[in-house]
Image 1 (cartoon, helix red, strand yellow):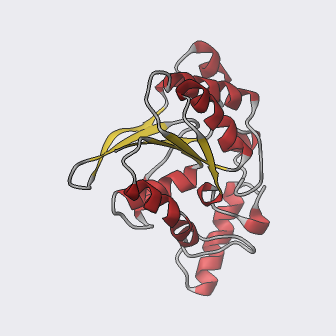
Image 2 (tube, one colour):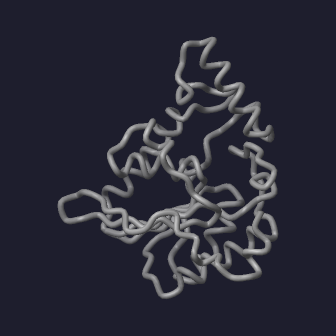
Image 3 (tube, one colour):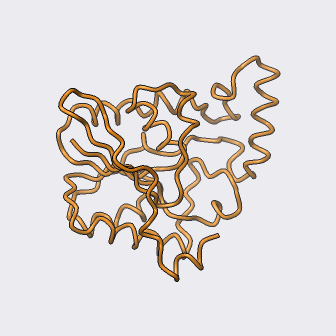
Length: 208
């Protein structure tokens, strides 16, 4: 079994450093170019199914992959980014400061802190359980198109880690991580956060 985990392309809120969460922000012009580039990177690769977050930025990234591979595209709310609730749209610097303050006043770890009307990292860890069950139960080649935080949680769970270990993973826009499941059921990291498909002068100039 082979798995490709892809983060969505760039949005204007990525550039501004704002928490997007469940807010449905589309790709920026640069993000659309990135999506086309990652689609081309999948040309000639066998993919049986594409599982994508139902938010626009993920779907706009998944569709060029679908066009290149011919694989059916499925939308899954479980693959959405962590919900930041009332903090969505705010700078990540402010979100981080509030999280630290909330953790200190409530005696919770940063991974347990929930923004008002939002989710904690632990909530996200639990939310993706159906996706992990899908991965574990299939022999198909899957491409998953999701969000930075969600991709981190997925990798931590696939490699039998903890919610804390999810903080070790980082993904650039349209970065591709390739994973293979061995016959003994364990997973091998074939490549990690590969964004080499963006290495052309037009996209390199447009990235910020």
